[in-house]
Length: 285
Image (tube, rainbow, N blue to C red; front, side, top):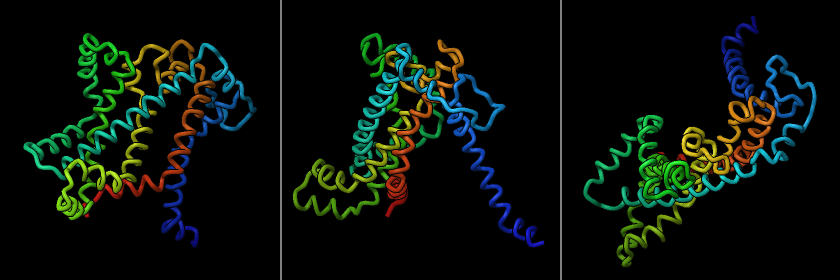
């Protein structure tokens, strides 16, 4: 009777929580298990460790035919450039929408919000066609280039970043701007000397979230980058289970583990700042 009462009041919540955790962590467990197996196949029938081997990691890092380091460097460079540029442009745009007065301001910010309501996958065909034409007069920024992929990423990240940063700018007291204007400060001086120092925590959060999102992105990277020397790590690892490397689940799991560890460690170490930055830009004070 006591157990039934406990289960009906609290126990079912624990059961649901444990089931959800198991459902979320089981794929990760299988990736870790497969990465340390000697075989390159995915053995779903064995859920317990049967052996320990670093052969998959050795194959991934030592095989000259697998440019894993190139894939990683491409991912880091692309993610870093996109995150820095998107924060720079997003901060300037958010400041303009929040503090400056110009014609079409309300319609522009509403249109930006409306565009974000549609899935980005709907624009793949249009973006592909546009970048094909860009390649004609700007080969370095067209289809199949890292520069072109960076431009596409920048366009996709602007809406969310602008809205998040605008919420933070709106929370900054307008009296600071008025006091600076009384002292003769221009809008550009207000932006660099008041807004940027105050917004540095949320700017760091936006930069981090953008970096993680771009680092893990696959669809656009697979569509734009066909040269193996320019591919990102997400696209490169996909070849292990559906390309020139056939179905080598072992190296694929090892690569996934190596790729995810820096992001997971960075995310967990900065989780407090991410939450503070998101809540700072979520309300208007």
